[in-house]
Amino acid sequence: MNFCSHCGHRVQFAIPDGDDRPRYLCEACGTIHYQNPRIVAGTLPVRGSKILLCRRAIPPRKGYWTLPAGFMENAETTVEAAARETQEEACADVSIHGLYTLINLPHINQVYMIFRADLDGGFDAGPESLEVALFEEHEIPWEELAFPTIERTLRHFYQDRLSDDYPLHISDITPEDRERYFGSA
Amino acid sequence: MNFCSHCGHRVQFAIPDGDDRPRYLCEACGTIHYQNPRIVAGTLPVRGSKILLCRRAIPPRKGYWTLPAGFMENAETTVEAAARETQEEACADVSIHGLYTLINLPHINQVYMIFRADLDGGFDAGPESLEVALFEEHEIPWEELAFPTIERTLRHFYQDRLSDDYPLHISDITPEDRERYFGSA
Image 1 (cartoon, chains in turn cyan, red):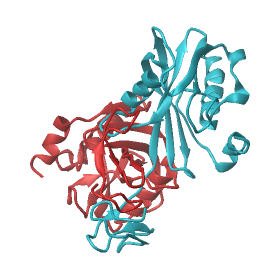
Image 2 (image 1 turned 120 degrees about the vertical axis):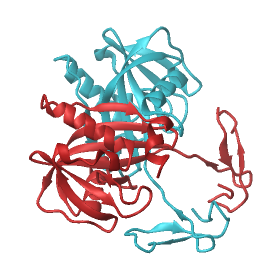
Image 3 (image 1 turned 180 degrees about the vertical axis):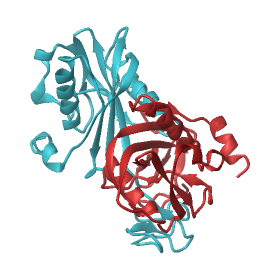
C-alpha cells in the first residue's frame, strides 16, 4: 500500500495513537487502513466411499489437485462461500454438513474453513479446473496435492472415517509445512 | 475506495474480465482491489459457574456488555487472536477450549468466532473496557448486551451447560436480528 484509497495522498506506515502495531495511515484525511486475514472456504464433497477433487487450471499450483475452495466474498456466509466455490470449481451442488477443518496460515494471513458435504448430482470442470474426478482412498494423488491444507483435511477424513466420527479439527500450518509443496513448484 | 492504493490513480468499480461481480479496478496499473469479510475472534471465559463480561468503553455500543472479542490481525491464528483480545479487553489470561460459536453477519461482512475458555488468574478493565466482572446466569444483563452475537453465544452456553456438552454452533445473524440492538442505540 502506497497511497490512501480514500483521498489518494501517499500513506505512512506507523503506529497510530493508542494502537500497538504499525498500520498504513493517511495524514491528509486521517484514515487508518487496517489489513486483516482472509477466509478460504471450501468443501470436502463425499459420494459413497469416494471424494471429489479438482485439478487446478490456474496458479498457484496449476495442475495440482485440490478440494474446491476459495476466498470468501463480502455479503455471503461461510457456508454460502463454500457451496459457491464448489459450484464454480466443480459445477457441483452439495449438501453441507458441519465445519470439519479450521486451519490457520498466519504467515500468509489466511484461515481455511473446509466443510464436509454430500455431493448431490453431477459435476464437471469449472473454468478454474482442468478436470474434476472422484477418488477412492487408494487413488488419492498424495504427491500431487496443491496445498498442505488439502492434504491435512484428507488425512483427517480417512482417519475419522474409521470410527465414522468427524469432529472439528483446528490446527495451524507453518512455513515449514508448506515447504515441500512450494519448494519445488 | 476512490483511489488505487498501489499507484494512486482513481479507481473504477466494474466487473473484471472473467469475474462475476464488480471490484475496485485500477486501469493505470491493473490492480484489482478485492474486499473480503473480517474475522472477529473472542472468548467466553468461564470460572466455575460464572462467566466474564466486559463493559465497552468505546463505540459502537459504549456502555454495553460484551464478551472479549475483536478483529483478528494479520500474522496471528484465530486462537491467538481470541486470547489477545481477552488480554487487551479484560487483562485476563485464558486456557482456550474448542471453537464454540461461528456466526456469520453477511450484511456487515463479519464472521464471529467465539472460543470457550477457562479464566486463569485475575482480570481488570483494559483501555477499551469501563469495567470487567464475573456473572452468574441470573445476573447476566440481557437487556444491556452490546451485540446479538454475544446474546446468542450466551444463550447457547446456558442451554448446553444443562447437559455439559458444548458442540460448535454455526448460525447467521440478519439485519432484523440486529435491529433491537441498534435501533435504539
